[in-house]
Image 1 (cartoon, rainbow, N blue to C red):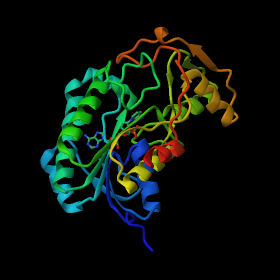
Image 2: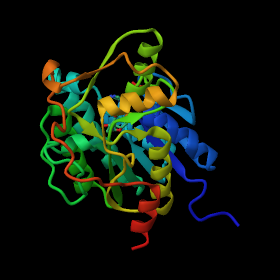
Image 3: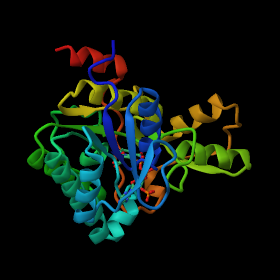
Length: 289
Ligand SMILES: NC(=O)c1ccc[n+]([C@@H]2O[C@H](COP(=O)([O-])OP(=O)(O)OC[C@H]3O[C@@H](n4cnc5c(N)ncnc54)[C@H](OP(=O)(O)O)[C@@H]3O)[C@@H](O)[C@H]2O)c1
């Protein structure tokens, strides 16, 4: 017998990106009808739909045509430095774009999953719970928090998922992620600086996509922190990636954050206060409550 939630009409924004492309790929394999919204780089999976999310009329028109049951909104100006330098564009894309998506989702009576970030926090303590108070320290984080507020205000049925440092096996949206960049450089014999005093929870795009699918298929509402299970410094993560792919790690140079010049303030300078995990099985446990 066919599952109640199978064959959703699923619209994914940011479907040409690192996360959205993986989600579109897995969602199609799960039997859903996937509409993949992109802007500059055509989406590889699902039915490609070109859309500028800051254009309200265009958003409404596409949503009327597609009539989605579920929307995953991942399209964002993700370049944190660009957000700092071009605040107008960051606000237009991340906040107004999300407002447009949220309004159109409500009109279609669809379920909205908004993909947010650990950058809504200041990074001082780390291991944030869903109940901790946000306190963004750069413009990207501020726009993502304001976008979360738009989602909560406008839509009836939503879920906000916050994640951390996504990585994956293939380039997406015209760029490579930290893990691929690192491997490329090490293979070319180049030295790579990696931070010893910035900790986060790197998240494989496949795992994030699987967790997201579980949420949308079960229509779970609320805020979820979905990330990799391990809190690790950039330096240790870089060494782990190199070892996993059998690449010489001696060219990874341990570097303190103060040795870099930053445009947007970075997160998490302090050492972890404790070890804390979120993973797929924990999501299952929590969801049974
Ligand atoms: N990457 C991370 O480490 C990380 C960490 C925490 C949270 N997140 C969140 O996770 C989500 C996905 O991130 P990602 O790294 O997968 O993104 P990404 O690879 O940088 O891709 C960004 C996506 O947004 C689309 N986009 C940007 N501006 C747009 C516009 N004006 N109209 C329509 N589409 C637009 C891009 O489309 P085109 O390329 O086709 O133009 C692309 O598909 C984002 O919400 C981000 O805030 C990411």
